[in-house]
Amino acid sequence: MKLIIAANWKMHKTAAATAAFCQALRRDEALFEGVEVLVCPPFTSLPAAAAGLEGSAIKIGAQNMHWAEQGAYTGEIAASMLLEYGASFVIIGHSERRHLMGETDQQVNLKLKAALASGLQPILCLGETENERKQGQTTAVIKKQLTAALEGLAAKDLVNLTVAYEPVWAIGTGQAASTDDAEDAAALVYRLATEQFGAESAKRLRVQYGGSVKAENIGSYMALPSVSGALVGGASLEAESFSALIQAARKAVLH
Ligand code: PGA
Image (spheres, rainbow, N blue to C red):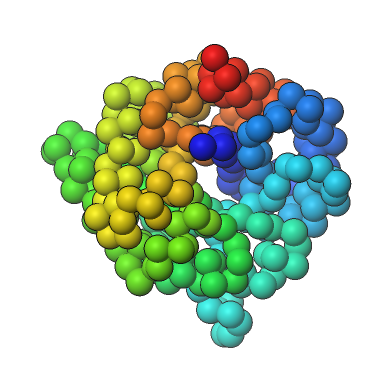
């Protein structure tokens, strides 16, 4: 399955910084062959990313969206507005939105359905907190989050869906999950998707690992049977380190 490596910049990079990043990353693009690469800048930097990546195979994603097509939702943004600025992906249900902004499983489900209906490809984030892991609830949390998110989706939607397993305790901490834990979680996602949609459809889904991924450790995750990509925060902020990380991922699956 084609690897998908996504840069989640969170609340970093002005339009000028985005333009500089895109220019630098493009220089290495020939080294990314066979890997689907995307950058997810803040909303206001989407036009700079679109301009900076014009004619390149590197894609653009947004970090969030509202489920309504339009309306009285101050401060929110609709799928059509993201598409207009060149986004083809959207991150949904990132742990920072769930835990800092109070996003619920139901809202994640509405967003997922709206993204798919609009033609945006969602990256659905899920994962347990440190406390939940300590209490042995990892499997239950993944199951609850995934089941709620996929409610009402059709089997044909899975080809456009990526699920990012991101244990909350691994995000931005330098404490990445073990490869066993990442594989267990990714395999669970496939099992649950198979139960709901059947094996043929479930196998079209892609699962990323996220949480303190860097060039030095990405290879071990990409070699896992159920993981085919990564969602990268901190290590995606510099073009050089993001490029090194993509190249390391590519090497890991070629050998
Ligand atoms: P990190 O963030 O790579 O900085 O741990 C990952 C994420 O939040 O998507």
